Image 1 (cartoon, rainbow, N blue to C red):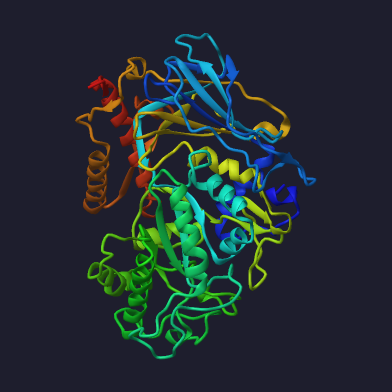
Image 2: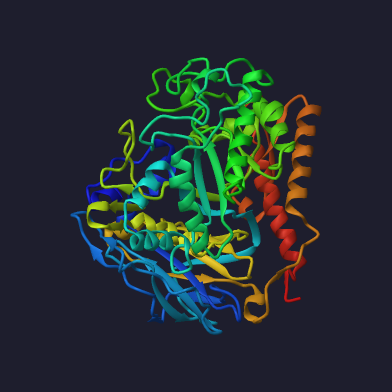
Length: 555
C-alpha cells in the first residue's frame, strides 16, 4: 500500500514522519482534488454554489510519462529531454473555476475548468467556505537537501538535474519554498563527520565546512533558488555536536552536551550554530530558521544507531534562553527564527507546554531525492522519497506523493491563511480551505472512499457577498475579536476556579451547537475542561459575529 511498492525501490519511511506517512501510504488508493476558480479578477475558488460540473479539459503543460512497477498506481518518468510540467497558474475568466485532480488511476494534477453556478437545487454533501473563520497563516512547504539527496541529484546528467530541480522549485513545477539543510552529517550521509573534529577546540578555531557542503549541497541550493520565482526559506538542523563536546564522546548512542546550559560546552555549541550561518552566508545563502536539535529524544536512547544528541524539553528551553538565543542576538543573524522539538508528533503537547503553543504552519518533507535502494544511508536506514533517481539510466521517477505535496505547495503560497470549510453532514472526505494573500481561495479535498470505487458528489458554497462583487476581498475586523475573547474567557475561568471551593465548567447540552442551551455542572477537580468552556465561548462569539453583519467589505 506504500508508494514505494510502485517500483519496489525504497524501504519504509522513517517514524519521525509517521503522521504524513499515514496519508501517503494510502495515496494510491485515494483521490486528491484541488479546487480553484476565478474571483474576478483574482481568485481560484470564488463562488456562491459550486458543484463539480460542468467541466471542460484545459491544457496542462507536458503530461506524465506514466509507467507501472507492479504497484496499484503509476510513477512519472523524467530524463534529460522530457519531464511532465504544469503551465504557470493563470486565473480563469470571471464566473469560472479551475479544478486540479490527482487519482489512483493515473491522473496527475490534471486541470479542468468549470462554470460557477449562482443557484443550484443539488442535494447531498455541501462544504461551506467561510472566511469569517480565520486560523493559522501558512509559511509553506518543502523538503530536505541532505548529503544523500545531493549525491543522487548530482549523479544525473546536467539536463536531468535541471528537470528535477525545476520539477520541485519552478513555476512549471510544484513550487517548494522551504529547504531543510542538515548541519554536517546525518544518517543520510556516506560518512560520519562534524565541522570541528578537533578535541577541546571550544573556540572553534578549526571549524570548517566540508566538501559535502561546498561541492554538493550549496551548489544545489543555489540552483534551486535560481529557478524559483518564490522567496526561498532555508532552515538548518544539527544531528550531533562533535563527540568531544558530549558526555558519550561519540556521535551516536545515548549522550548529551557536557555540563549544563550556560556552561562552556553549551556556549561553544551555540557558537557552532553561528559559525555555520557565517560560512553559508559567504556563499550568499542566508537562513530563515534553525531547529535546536534533530530528534532530541533519540539521544536519550542507549545504543541509538546513528548521529543524535539528547535534550529534554527543559534542557532545550534553557539552552535557547542562556546560550543559543543570546548568541544569535549578538550576531549578524539575529533575525533567524528558532524552532523547538523537531521530533515525533506524539511529543508535541508536552514540549509545547514547556516552550510554546501554536498552529502548524507548514510541512517539510525529508529527502527530496533518493536512489533505488532508498539511500545512500551509512547505517542502511533506508527511506522513501517523492522522487527516486535511477542514475544508471539517467532518469528519475516522480512518485504519487510528489503530486500529493503539489496540491498544497503549488496552490498555497506563503502568507495564505487557513479558513473555515464546514460540511453539512458527517463525511469521510478530508478537506481544508485557504485564502491566499492575493485574495484567491483554494480548497483541497481528499477522497478516502476511492479504494471502494465510490465517487462522492459535493457542492462547495459560500454566502460571502464579496465573492460576487468582482473586487479584491478585504477583511473588515469586527469589534468581537476572537483572540481577545478567548483570553478573557481563560482569565475568567481560572479566576472562577481560584475563588470557588468546587470546580465548575460549561457542559454541552443537546442544543449547544446553536448556543440556545447552556448549563453549569459541578465536576471533580481532576475533570477540569477548559476546551469545553472555550467551545461554548466560540459558539457565542460566532453568534455575535453574525449579528454584526458586513463582516467583509470591498473597500
